[in-house]
Every structure is written in structure tokens, then in C-alpha cells.
Length: 221
Image (cartoon, rainbow, N blue to C red; front, side, top):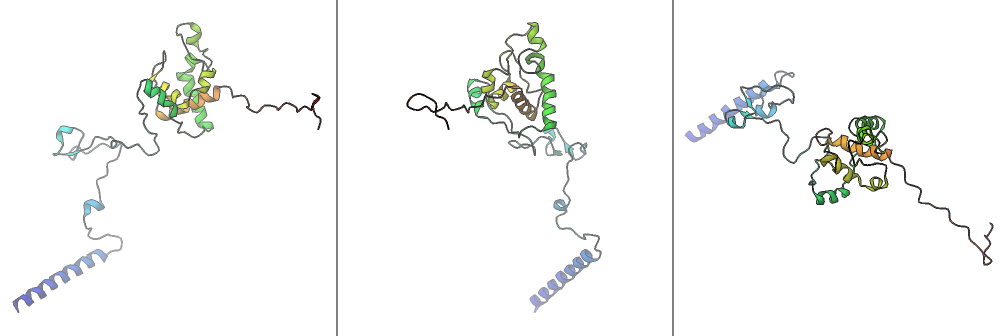
């Protein structure tokens, strides 16, 4: 009998609590009422350019545990949305050879991007390679810098896009690296722009010679 009373009392308590929760949650359509697990409903967002609350967050690894550690760095192995993958080939002969297999990840340049690539070329490249890439820039013609590559020559027409990018990234011969001056997209844009400076390959189609009859005279159709 006593056990039965305990069960009835417990049931009554749960019923009252459920009714109170329902009334609290539904009393006003503009309010959410009581929220289960509020930490999940209202997470502490971290805005990129907003100063952190120093009473809650720290950027110093030594203060981990006491405060929430936040280093503002992306997770290892991830890339930013819309960003290009990092260039991982090494700066050695093997990396240079493998670079020929790397394809330009950018689509053909539109008018705006082409104009930007031309601007970058004139800032960083034309002083040696010349405005048209023919190794006739001011430093090349002055004789102060030797071995400037003629980017319109056959060797560079045949050079793979990835190898050209590799040279921009690490530098080649007298040319230093442009990894710090240009980001990934800009370097690939420059590769495309250099292609636009190079002469177009001659058509492979050749006119077939006229067929001749047994007497050696050309047949007329």
C-alpha cells in the first residue's frame, strides 16, 4: 500500500512539472520559453576581427585550462572556403620535375582578372622581362642583371604551367622567390598572363599536296 502511494505521488509530481513546463513554454508565442541545453542553443561565437573577451579567452598557450585558448589559426590540413590548396612540392630537382604534372587550377581569366594579372606583371616582372616578356626590361638592357629569361622563347612556350609556378614560388637561377609578394591565386594568374604574351603555335594542319596521275601531272577536279 505504501509503495502504491509513493508511485502515485511521484506520478503527480511529474505531471505538475510537465504541465508547468508546457505552460511556461507556450505562454508567449514570441518567447522560446525554457531551453534544454542552452549552451548548444546559444554558443559562444568568435568573430574574426572582434577583440576577444580577455576574462574568458586567451591566445597564450601557457594559460590553457584557466581560460579558453583560441589561436585564430585554421585546423591543420584544412583550407579556407574558396581558397587554393597549398603548394607542397619541395624545392629540389625532384620537386621541379614533378611540377610539370601540376595543372593551373584557375579558369581562363576574365577581363577583370586579366587586367589585374597585367598590373602584377608590370610591377614584379616587367622590370627584367619587359612589358611583353621578351627579356628587354630596364634591368635586362642595362646589363646589371644577366640571364633574364625571354618568356616568349620556345623553351618557355613548352614549359608546363606547374613548372612556371614552381619557379615563381621558389625562384629560379637569378630570379628570387615571389612566394611572399604574391598569393597563390596571383601566381597562377601570372602564369596565365605570361601565356597570353607568348606567340600562338602555328596551325598543325598543312595543305595536302595535289594528287598526281601516272604521267606526273596534277589531277584536276
